[in-house]
Image 1: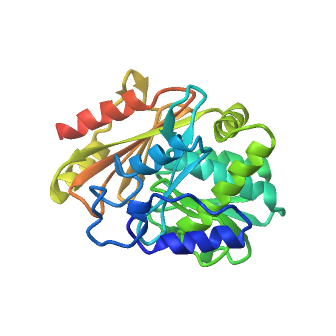
Image 2: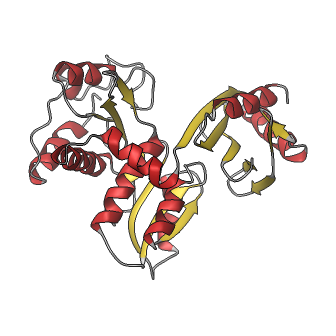
Length: 302
């Protein structure tokens, strides 16, 4: 997206033996004005519209986008209905983890994700017999979790904000390496007569369909901290008619987790970079939207 990562991605595809990617010409060259997007992050609404349009016109199997410095990766896929949809950061993380775990071996392997990412990676790690760790939000904390476990062999880490690392080093997010692996996953699936959508369905059959969503409530930094403190002092007994069964406070992360039975949870924390409170909701085999909406409404009144 108007950055320096484009040519590096082309080189990485070539070295991996992949066909050269078809690029969006008007977004390929570096341009600090970012003229075709409101903000050059694949997470932002509309940022991947042009690459999806190109992929649709080519009947492609995959659309990828890196941010300008190439450390994040956005992914969109065609669906059976004929539409295209963006994958969530957690869906991309699960696909990459599934591939990396299948390509590696040993019970000393370590996978790491953040507190606000999906619980799915932990279940995948248990099934694969590998080590699993959670860190605070931000890739520097994933790196810290790796550093603290020198006896274990790091093989994969991710954060739901489109940050992934599919190689042991360097311990920082790498959207180019992740793009290469996502292309390899897609090629392998197509060789088996399958699609990325089929791979996601397979993960859901094995572990349940882990659905995640986010909400943001705009508050000043001081108001954000106060709202989370008030919620911690007086958490709700139910959210969207679902009983809150456990409340956990992560002090160093400033994060409050409300567990809603074995298959759902809502997490809240003030943003570290913007004037807002962030809400992260997850439910297995259900819609997390009502939980997130209920929490957002509570935060607006505190």
